Length: 121
Image (cartoon, rainbow, N blue to C red; front, top):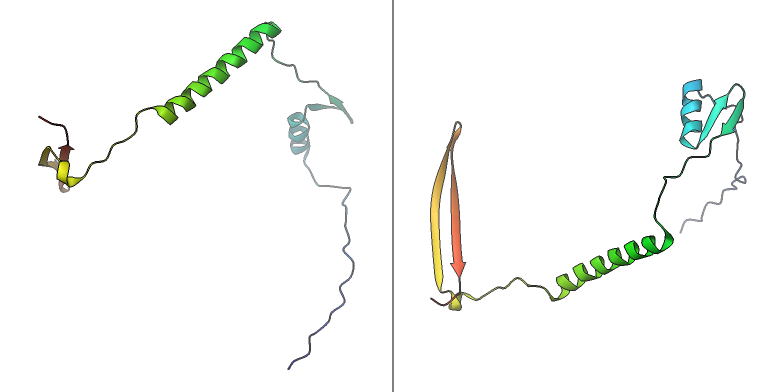
């Protein structure tokens, strides 16, 4: 039986580089992304302008409730709406198969269409 090998591992260290190598255009792009702009050696925060909404609080509430009702109605329709129906081969009332070909430049491609129903005629 082989004895386990034990190694001593030094504690983890974090090296922080305080002099990142960014070009001025990369720096300006990053500052602009987070709402700052560079003016000389000073970065100034530009408060982004919120979109203007001329609705009252009651109108916003009514709009939100209408959206929630629409989503609930869609869920209800999915739950109780029409479901796909499958039927057995014993109850097939009508079956028709047609074959067709499509002439293409590189040859021909065949298509098969089958129509099956169990409706009573």
